Image (cartoon, rainbow, N blue to C red):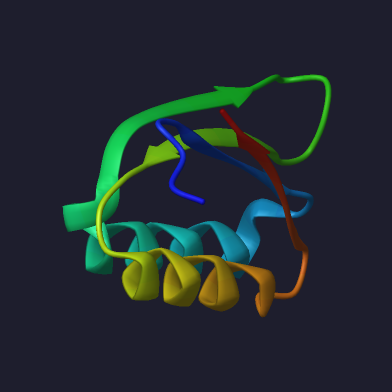
Amino acid sequence: MQHQFEIIGIYIGKPGNAYNEVQKIMSGFGCIVRTRLGINTEETDGGVIIVDITGDEEQKRLFRNKLSQLEGVEIQEMLF
């Protein structure tokens, strides 16, 4: 089923190298990223990036897979 909105929440628990890797992946899949919002606080290490993705199903699958393989990174999805 095709969804109008596919929202990926990316939690980066320890920003260090994971943040740089997430940035590389986001840049590499820029063609499917429609909207991006970053949230972080000074009280905690890490933060959350909320991404609205669109386009090719295979590219979206690869994007999710690459992110989920990163140590210290957790992803969650919302589909509408």
